Structures are given as structure tokens and as C-alpha cells.
Length: 454
Ligand SMILES: *Cc1c(COP(=O)(O)O)cnc(C)c1O
Image (cartoon, rainbow, N blue to C red; front, top):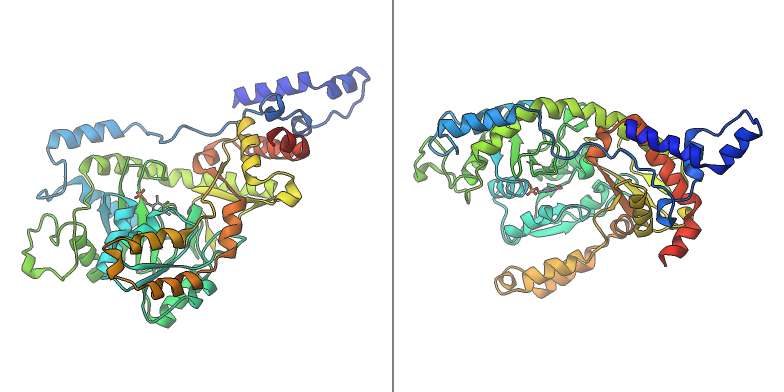
């Protein structure tokens, strides 16, 4: 932070207006923010605001190496045939922290999704309603089972899937609702859980970005039949790769245990004759990953309030700036702030989202574009037009499905969306002020920047 302050002091020194005002003995000097926002933007050759963008990710707490060494020396490197593996400890602690009864560790967030869908016996001809505004793993996990991802539109203010749009896409073939808590913020679970209950369709929560986020005081992932988590390196709990599923349903937990380990409970040696008919694979987590992550649980819990305070503060600052519309979080919920998603409205800001990101990166603020508006129906069609896929759905069926896929809000958030990544919110409060300064500065100079970039 001291570096950051230094930079701001330099700004004052360089600012001619302020120097002149001081020479004239004018008392009311502009605030630091005002100075920073009036100076020439970095993308036009000015000094970058050089904000503190938070710690390098992942962070280690110190205990990981010793725990890794313990696993190494114990020879219990994986859970298969090891009754006292650290993977079991990880599962128990993870389920508890996430407010659920059963936890099963898997090799990735994608494996968490495919495990949950396998345990639901999702297969060819089935439909799973989900959101287009997500990482490809969400709909790829549906396609992996030769089921059809049916895309519902998103809500413009929250970026989350719209339960009304989901309801309009239910057919006799719908076998699961797959909302994503995108950016770590909750989807509208009141609407989605009610839809699931009314139509008797299980809800699978993609909580891969949403560790410790909440809905009505309960942890995300614990409200539907099953919650799916990713522990890939960028996520809040980073194991390099890794994932988990959680559920309160004992029978469903058993089915997922089978699905992730070739039909066996990994160390029970249960005979195949006793398996429940769940298609299975090997998606087991290694003990090394489990060791790193169990060491990181206290950090995960500790970081949540820092992110929330900083992100809510920054969102309040950005909301004051015309043309930048930070995401809203439903009042029933609390975000984990994996991302802060905002829309850049060109007519009000003077730059489009791509230009905005370029100008902000030059200032040292790591804004990025998010998921873009793209031809998802074309993508899915390619898969079902390939040799094996042609057996599953007729051309007419896919035509009707594509025809019904209308996603105007997805297009808009895809075109206008910009993101800040979670580690930004582990920086100081002053860093949030500096981001807002940089946004105001870029907006003030938007016409010049647009010209320079065109
Ligand atoms: C990261 C992520 C996944 C997949 O997790 P992996 O561990 O990378 O397989 C799925 N859904 C969402 C929303 C994600 O962000």
C-alpha cells in the first residue's frame, strides 16, 4: 500500500493545477481522488494509477508443505484401499463448512457436475435447463451424458439465470435444473427451488465459483439436491485441480460415491453386484490435493468477509459513475465475490467494454472481459451433428430447440460485461478508491481514448 500512496503523492506533485493553486495560496486543494481522476489517462501517455490489485494467487498459509510431506511419508497418496486417507478428512470438513451432511471429493469441478448428473441417471434424450452465462464446463457436463443443455436467459441486473425463463423452458424431458451461481453470487434460489418443487425436478447447483456464499443464511450448494464445487487453481479454495459434491441425501451420496469410483466405495471393496446401476468412472481426488486444501480451510473462511466488505464498497462507488453498472446481488443472498461483474453501457460511458478494459489495464487495474455473447446453439449442434451425436437427436428436434433458444439478455451481458477477479478484493480499501478514481478518469477522457484506439 505504501507504494500506492507514493504514486498518489507523485500525482499531486505533477499536477499543474494544484501547483498553481498552491502558489496562489488557494486553500481548498482538490482531494486526492479529484487530482487522480483529472490527470491524463495512462493509455494516452499519462502515469498509471498503479493500483494495488491484491495478492498473487494462490496464497499459501504455511502449513501446506508439512501436510504434503506427511502424506508423502505415509504412502497414502490416494484413497483407493486406504481407509485413513486425508481425502476422507477433507470430505468431512468440506461438507461441514458448506453446511451439508455428505461430501465427496472429486478430481475437478467438471467431475463434480458429471458425477451429480450420472447419479441422477441423466442420459440421451434428457434435457437439463441451465444458463448460457457460465464457464463451458457447465453445459459440457450435460453434453458429456448426451443430454441436451437447454439455455434459459439471464437477469440483466444480477447476471444470474432467470427462474421465469427457466420455467418457460420446462418440457416432459426436463430431468434437472442446473443453475450456476455465477461470479460466486447466488442465483435466485427462491424461484428456482420453487420451480423444482412444483414440477418435481431436482436442482443441481453449480457452486464452482461460490464457496461460502449464501442464500437466506444457508451456504450455496447446500440448498438443492446437490451442490458442485471446483478447487481448480483460480477458485477460492485452490488445490491445483480438484472438486467436491455435497448433499443431505444419504442415498444420493451413495450413488455419487459409486459414480466417482467405478461403482465401489473406494475402500469398502463392495462387490459390483451390490452397485445401484450408476454409470461410473474414476474421478477420485489425490491425497496431495486434499492435504493442501485442508490446510487452507481457515484461510477460505477468513477471506470471505474481506472480499465482501471491499466488493460492496467498490460496487457502491462504481454505481455513482454513469455508464458503469455493477451487478446487483439479490437481497436474500451474499456473494463469495469470485468475480465482480459490471456492464459498460457505451452510450453513457463513451467507450465500449473492450475499450474500457484496455484503458483500465493501462491504469494498472486488471479488469477483463468475461464470457462473451457467442453462438452456443451452433456449438451444441456441432456435437450432435457428429457421427455418434446424430443417433441421439433428430434434425427437427435440434431445429425446434435452437428456434426456442432466445437469449437477448445473455447477448447484452456478453457484449457489455467486464469483470474484476476475486483476489482484487483482498487488497486494501484505498485500492477500491483508486479503482473508482481510474474509472472516473477514463470516463472523463473517453472521447480522446476512443479516438486513440480507433
Ligand atoms: C471452474 C468452473 C467449473 C469447472 O471446474 P473445473 O474444476 O475447472 O473443472 C464449472 N462451472 C463453473 C461455473 C466454474 O467456474
